[in-house]
Image 1 (cartoon, protein in one colour):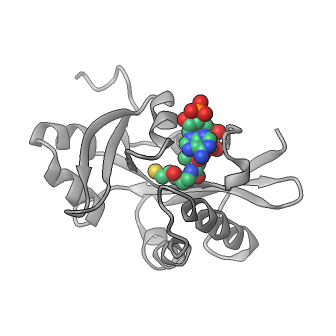
Image 2 (cartoon, protein in one colour; image 1 turned 90 degrees about the horizontal axis):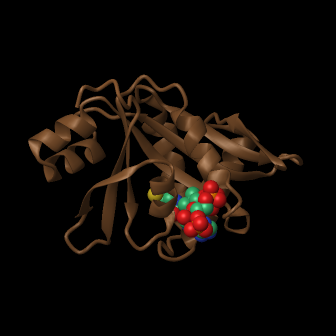
Length: 183
Ligand SMILES: CC(C)(COP(=O)(O)OP(=O)(O)OC[C@H]1O[C@@H](n2cnc3c(N)ncnc32)[C@H](O)[C@@H]1OP(=O)(O)O)[C@@H](O)C(=O)NCCC(=O)NCCS
């Protein structure tokens, strides 16, 4: 393994590297959205890093080159994703998956470094030791990312669109306290 995982702050060379990785990963199909890096930069710095439970990591090669990034935070009512997904679920499912949940917000690995286990390691480190009952995320059904999440134990909670003519997404959830929930 020629890379290590480090905490990611919202400035400095690692942050710039993480934004570059994110931009390049989402410039590829099925997203084909090269401008998304600029959007995520301002969302991370201005909004997301202030949220409860925010934490971010990057994967760094020996020479200091960033090859992957991930971040998340505690989901709460009043947040767009939390409320939109909650409205699409039954009351029971919303209670189960969203009442004490950690949201995996973004994860990206540089296109030339994908398929080497970096994404799995980033998800595992982000979730390690979390106090929440569940981890939740959404991922496009036409991306292969859901296969990775499934392998890490996530299950499909529902399939939904976030915009009327937008792409369909899987909402996926992972029980972080298996055996302790009494369910
Ligand atoms: C999804 C992503 C983070 C996975 O990171 P990774 O380092 O390639 O993942 P790993 O090496 O740990 O695991 C590989 C598995 O991830 C999945 N995967 C998803 N996209 C992949 C890709 N482009 N290349 C290789 N594997 C990919 C596959 O299930 C693969 O396993 P398989 O080859 O046996 O099917 C990365 O591919 C990526 O950045 N994709 C573009 C952005 C994206 O989709 N982000 C997630 C949005 S929810």
